[in-house]
Length: 318
Ligand code: NDP
Image: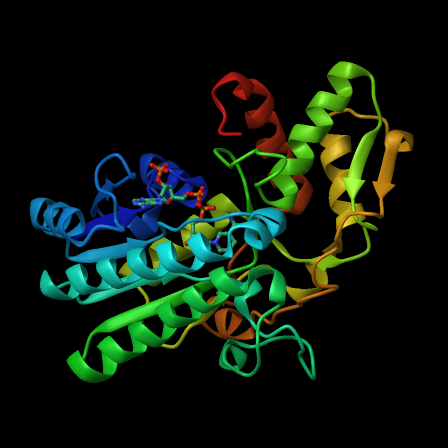
């Protein structure tokens, strides 16, 4: 029986994988899933990582654990974003290899791709074609090295280590920190507070940057498939189709609608940074493999996410 060890199992994506397993998603195929959090092992530490791997003896690994943050945390903590992610990634891949794990699917991110792209949409092959945006270079280079290290294990030891690359993820169990979180959960939290206090909802930046979003449960579905069914080794973008790209302003309006907040009270603080103007990626490799994959419509997914946030406000990470 396949035993799938999920690092970062207590986070946004890990919880979505757990949800799919609990709902008997067909791709799980009877496999046993084990979800690790930092309380089980601090993956920055090689011995703790090795002990966790020896204990669970996985046949497959889904590697999600990372020090993650939005634009502002990335700008403030470049050293930790780089060193801690490098340590975690190196330890996880080393222990997976030592334990004879043949399939390890690790998560990188579209935000680590080059800042200047001659022609959109971005494809998997462009990862190393130029420097990342200066705001997140610590995180970006750590994630790029994860891709290089996965390929190195494949070349040198004939492993099947794959990196998957989601766009912005949202869903239940996100990090709702306004200062340090990602844009979607941060907006949910600000909307919640604005509603309670009878204030305007202030959106940071101009609202004009374009972004692609993937619902965590759709991402979980694809990651389980990539681990247990798909056997390819070439990095894979995981995101809805290009025509689903939206502005931050459209995102804020959808959040507000889902939370019954009046749209005429959305205001923009243009003194705050926008980040990259756009980073449109192509999902054509994924579509070649999964032409019929159905992504949850954005508004339905956002409604599930905002409802979950409001119902669980007291126990959310923030
Ligand atoms: P979360 O921040 O929600 O969760 C991070 C997970 O990593 C938690 O389970 C956390 O454990 C674990 N973790 C962090 N540090 C350590 C450590 N030192 N030792 C062991 N475990 C640790 O992340 P997401 O679910 O959002 O992200 C999952 C993956 O997807 C990451 O690799 C991220 O880079 C990538 N990604 C995320 C995007 C997004 O929009 N969220 C976009 C693109 C890529 P604990 O709960 O105990 O702290």
